Image (cartoon, rainbow, N blue to C red; front, side, top):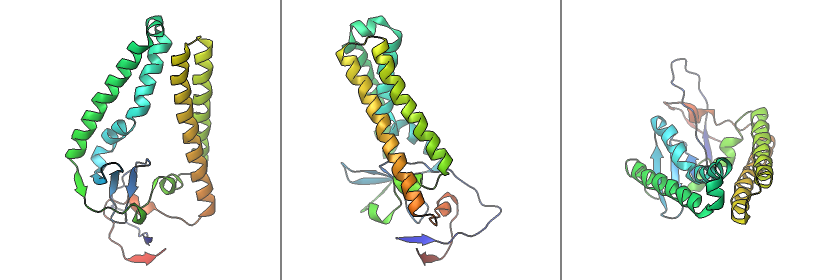
Amino acid sequence: MKQKDRSAGKNKTQTSMIGGFSVYHDDKNRTIYYNRITKRAFVIKPNDFNTFQTYNMRIFLTLAVIIVLFSFSNTFLANPIFAIGIGVLVFAVLQIKFNGFLNRCTSIAHFDTKRAYGHIQILSTEEAKRIILKVILFIALAVLVVYNSYAQHYNALSLVISWLLAIYAAFQVIVLLAALNYKRAHPDLDLSFLKEAQPKRKNAKK
């Protein structure tokens, strides 16, 4: 993989990065969403980062809605299918809007994920303290969700949903620890050029 040398520039506009297992960054300074099912890749522009992040978290948001409904209403506890139905509806709406959003993005033909920077590499560029903080927060989320489900005496179906959310949080912990390990194994990794709005540099071997 090739990496570009970083050059200083006082007037260059900085943009934040977004991540995810389906999100990649290439050496042309593009943020790309790759759909592994359809094998299609889409360029996500910086102005659309917040919108994309919302849609990209649609599964998590769906589970969160269901958990909240169970937590604050005995009606939903008595009729869990109703709460799950609302969650499914939320997911369906987000998925439809996400598909419409992607159709407005520029598509890339024959995108090779192996020639781009992936989720673990991008996460590893964050400060170690920030990564550790995220680990702690996800662990706390997993513990609190499971504890609350038993404290509220959820039924079997509700417990399953709570455990799914806890498993999701645990998975994120594993990913963050992998990124932390990658950071320690590659202390010289510098992907700061991905934040440059106008990257015009010479290629150099990594």
